[in-house]
Image (cartoon, rainbow, N blue to C red):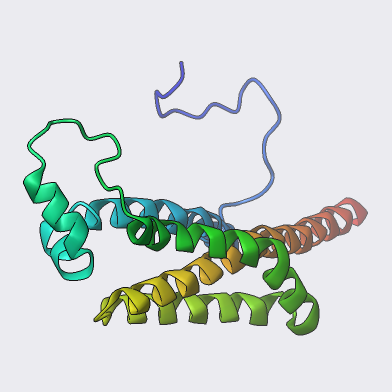
Length: 180
């Protein structure tokens, strides 16, 4: 039965591997690679509906929202600058993932490229946290997007390389145990 929590090895072959620290770290890296996209969707969606945020950075949208008494939630934020704020991260992530990250990876290698993506993401988060105007917000979102693009492209590549190394080591152990 699906989801009962029990694992039975009586009806098939037994997996010879163990749950090692390396496997756990690989799973965490894979999860984090996709999590930053979802996290941003939740944060940016929630923040853009906060009155204090709209009042400080998008006063025209805030005034329009306060004057609107309708219950229709569809396209209530008709603002090009708010759309630019929201979409700048996704456009930067797309461009970074398609063009920039691969070029940087060929020049620096995947580990330094992952570090560069993390630094870009942290710099974007810092700028957004300290933002005083819309320009700082959009620049921060673009840096976040580049960090996400690097992570999106490099996480899969890094994990595939790690798993190839792990597979090779498991095969080597099998050969040694077969010789004895």
